[in-house]
Length: 367
Image 1: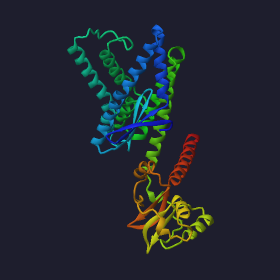
Image 2: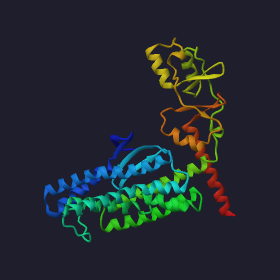
Image 3: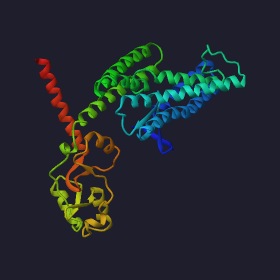
Image 4: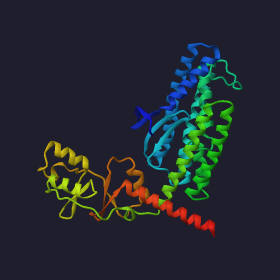
């Protein structure tokens, strides 16, 4: 996610913090200071919030653990003012699986709340469960209430909270993924409007939450539309069919000439009709600087690179290509190079498909 900084990793999952989390810390400090006008209260409030990092990460690891049951990898976890966001390799296709993955996070918080309650009972600390106090209450009580609040808040049926995914999972049992997402997103954006309206007259932090929910719902709808469109498309329909290739025995001078005379910047390297490498522009530039233009393509080409089959579903490849640094991926069929796939290909296909779909929608309305 943009504007995020890496702070570590757990079980191979990268942990990031979004810059808006620091806005939350500032707001927490102000709230605690305003109670009694003491700097100590503000510092303790910030330290308590920082302690919640671990709880939020555990919440997201709950999602990651449940996703792993279905062999879905978690790319990273980003901490946000409204909680955390575990970015999965892909969204579970089975609505029941999405339900399990979505529920796993709040379930962790409920379990933690139970653990803290047991510790309160064992320690004999006076505790009135009917009184909520997150500022001056006992530390165990604060963590108890915090976990309950995190669980309840995340169960609100609005993206990107878990409740939005739970709602989509429930709807997905009776309808297709796209329609379930659209309904869940509409519910979420309605809730965002309510949050924003209330925030205007009470807590400005609700406005920030409303913005996250609104844009989160929009993003989920867009991704669902992309998933729906690409699920009916094969790589064969997207790939570039007209392209140039190089031989491993060609010089870098020839590669430069081909780059300047065509609009192609990355070249498959083919030897006896067999794909043996890729000469990316970065390879060419580095080779020219280190070896000169008389060097052979085989000396600088990339030998370890991803490929896709022409028959592969575009939806499956799309989720993988997003995390790759390669600008071009060769497309093969029974081991023979038949095309090239770029992110621009996919973006243009989706752009044209959207335009055609909108035109059909307008024609239907006019009728």
